Length: 108
Figure 1 (tube, helix red, strand yellow):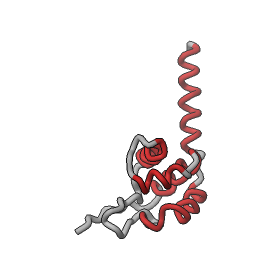
Figure 2 (spheres, rainbow, N blue to C red):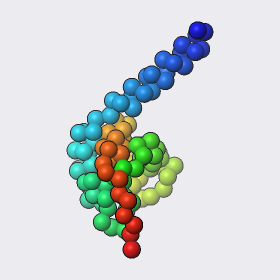
Figure 3 (cartoon, rainbow, N blue to C red):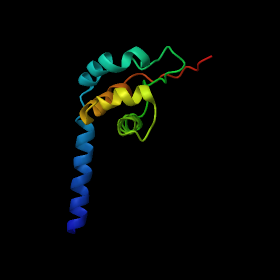
């Protein structure tokens, strides 16, 4: 096996380990503190203006929060909340909401 293949395998393992390292309990605590008022504690928003987060893809949630934080994705409310999140908070929140039961109901 050449050095490039070994490095690639090691990086893949490291990336997978980082994904597993998210703390769902910490995500739940942060969700209660920051997100639940608009998106619901279980990720089922009661306001049609706020998206459901429960059961959403973890990588999608992480990217959305990173994009709000950087300003790449624009929303005044979400941008303000995301700016206060660390990268670990983002990973934890995404893991927490991804672990919730998917919200499959349609809104009126």
